[in-house]
Length: 111
Length: 115
Image 1 (tube, each protein chain N blue to C red):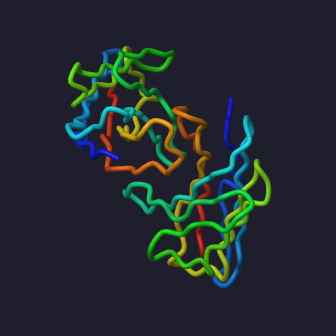
Image 2: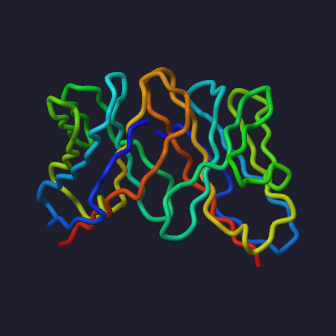
């Protein structure tokens, strides 16, 4: 699975959009980009995933660049409850293997 | 709603005790489940892959006789920490492998504290 690079931490004002970047320059054609978050003392929560098209669900939007070497997770209106560590993970489609977690981005939403 | 149920959420026990943690897949049959461990301020580290009907696959450095895994049905995997010691205190998390490109889903974790 391709390696990902994320900033260690970010701050965001409550009510504003949080844009979390992820670099995955070695991504392969069959690899998907998955985003999870982990709120303190809980298991990771699935947010969204995509292959090459932008995706949106009730939690967030995922913007993948045309060359697929980077992506951005967008929380449109961040709340205090969105404070968490966000993980960007790349994995081959159809893989039944485990997820490899990096250090993620610690997002702090401030009032 | 929850896709994976993990129980118990917290355990505090004396050194030498064996502790069993259950992980249940609620929405679908899971031939593969994963067990992770997370130390404070660290990321999740895979301990073992649990395969229904066969032996678990352990990561390097994880003692299979210490961390017993049983995956006897398509909806239940258990992790037993045998003769637990204070250094086994950690946050243990299970996950269920998704089908095709569907995502893995995680349990809420078990906080194990050995006194």
